[in-house]
Amino acid sequence: MRALYLGRFNPPHKGHIFAIKYILEQTDIDEIIILIGSGEKAYSLKNPFTGGERLEMVTAIVRTNFKIGQFYISAIPDINRNTIWPANVVDLVPSFEVIFTNNPLVQQLFVVLGNKEIREIPLVKREEFSGKEIREKMVKGEDWESSIPEEILPLIEKYKGLERIQSVSKTDEVEEIEHNKV
Image 1 (cartoon, rainbow, N blue to C red):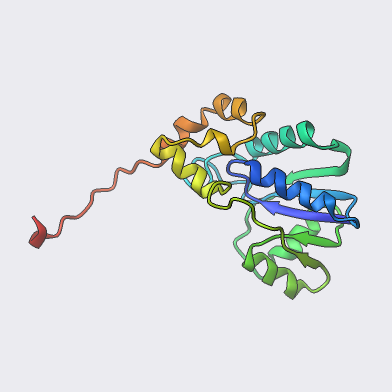
Image 2 (cartoon, rainbow, N blue to C red):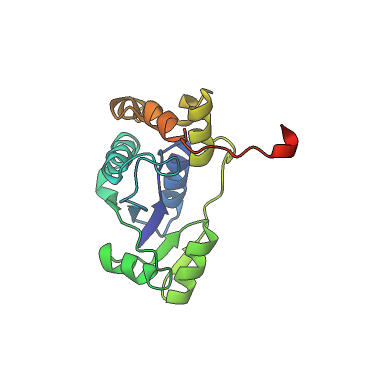
């Protein structure tokens, strides 16, 4: 049976490797479609890497840790219409029977679609293996590298990812000062 595993992978981290291993440990799963969401978004704090950069990073993880022949890897743009998004996914990827996601919205949308089994993945060290937490550590200059697979670190350096995330975290907006606090 083929499974779909969705994520933004911004950046890919060790938690993603755990999730892929978990999916492959399921005795009824033979192949995985890894689908990179928000593929068109980049150069923001939430989505610092381009879809192509994330595709290259996820492919590096799969090549290093798994048998590449068991995988389909693709990126998909957001269409910003939740009611038709699951059908768009089904239209753009190879067929699959089960979707692995912990995202409540994605679960709800695929339940409405009605013909896919939904399974969750156990979360491991969520405070450490979270894209949001890793990006925050990058902004603050804290240790983020320990949460990233070794094969991804040279790619983040190649894309100047640390500099990019620190740059997009800055703002040119003027903060209003309350007069009674001055």
